[in-house]
Image (cartoon, rainbow, N blue to C red; front, side):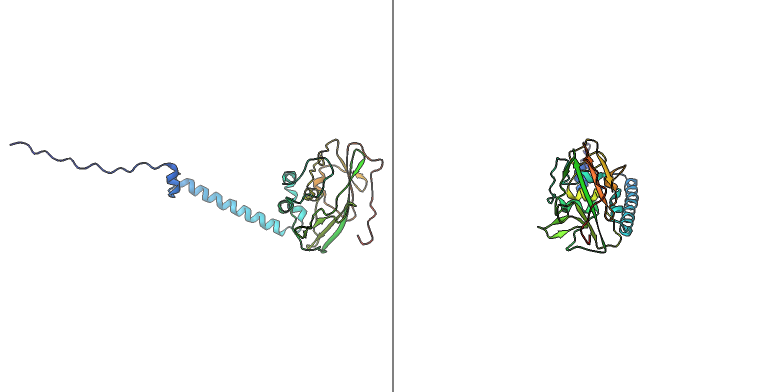
Length: 236
């Protein structure tokens, strides 16, 4: 009698390996569980640090202090120009520069903090005009805490917060002009700066504007006289 031939069972179905992109798209983890646990813990730390930073900035009463740590980034903001004078106010990217500068848009002038400083700029002995309407966007109908109304070089410091303070670096970056310890705009020939006639050291970006300051930035050949004071109008 012939031996009966057994029919082999059908082969088991094997799932084709998924590509990495398919697994990601399907929400399947591609890393070991410990990785996600570590990332989760790190994310908590990062979020906590961000919240703490926001609280510290919110509770700090000085707009100058808020942006001091970022002073090196001013010259990388959109619209800041390292070019030769004249420098008209730069409006195209003004709204983008304001938040990192610690400045805000205001519908009208505020007087809880209200004082004025004066800025002179000299390049090879010639005075460079500080234009009107820096920090005042007439098209969008707003102004900021730092602005000019005319071409005298008077910086109006006006904030809705009491005892608010701002720096020369904030004003120049708002204007859209490059400034550091060596250069203003495209001029880097031995920059010096003075406050009330006295030569200063360090980075002028960090200088906090004070009431009735006379600030002079000098590049190249100096003028015959470094101004030590400015005659403000009555009430300024």
